[in-house]
Image (cartoon, rainbow, N blue to C red; front, side):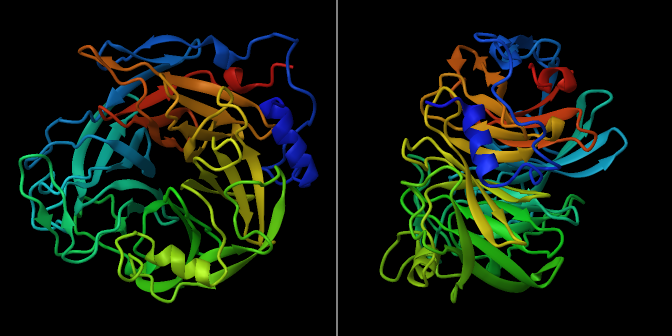
Length: 460
């Protein structure tokens, strides 16, 4: 295998990206450090959680963290914080007080996790919570329900105006039976699922679905702040699409808009057999019926993607993370590539070009890239969700192509090892000092801080 950094830089040079990756890739050169020298990510150490006193994570020297909003903690007005902590974003910052909205990927149709008349579908147990955190005191101030009555809220994205888009990663048609837990009668749901919802941080729990964003296995959303367009990923194992939503009125998603699927000219199937650095001119295929959740006569959860394919759309596999940066929209294919270990893509709206930026060739570098986030040091944070990991890793990809491990999951609670549980929902405070990320199960958020400049400097 070629070294991850050399591979990335080779691709970047071939694409002419030396001045486009978030202010420039900087000095391009060989892999940093003397032969055999370990990077800081190879020297992670057990670190004690300031909240629980448990050693939950391994971090670089000088880093510390506290945890908050654990699954099972009580919510005001009744109910408890659900498990399966997934996508998350920072929606507001006032001094040291940061407000996050966190998804919970609950599959069960056993009722909403918190009482109230505002649930989208009272039978369903997923949704979001609003978390207000005091970073100076390093503690959670409040946790309140923000969206209830949904299913499988996986990822999403922050809007330019400070709301959260929460996305359902499942398609359920009206009157379709949804299994519940053993011993409980199956539920025949009356609301459709597979939608995106706009969620406010002001405590209003009224569900606000956005039907024109489509009914499919949604994953993440990223916005182009210049145009107001949203880009959406789809997490289907066999065939997935990459979508663009153009609102009728930018900033007003409730007014509806047009959904389209990406067409890479000359690239109908991008799941395998793609060269690193390869690029395609992009067009967009309109989706005539964004609420066709299943193909007619099936329950395949593919009604939208098959409309796009019929119009010439390109096939991906398991599209997950999506991130808007100054140089374009970045997104991940968790199991894409010839080794089925993952791909990182970039779409540049101004030039209408799609490029493969990184492909996993060997799992020890990175495996199954999932959520993406803007990271410290002008880099990118990538959450792994690898079936091969005993301890899932949180990665940092620098604009110079360096790939570092910045945290490992070593959670063990009451003898139950959760180290293989995925990282999710990574996001960074406005000042860049704190990295927030979720451990999916048992379900909590970790706030990590330390000497980022020292950790991320090039060791050459």
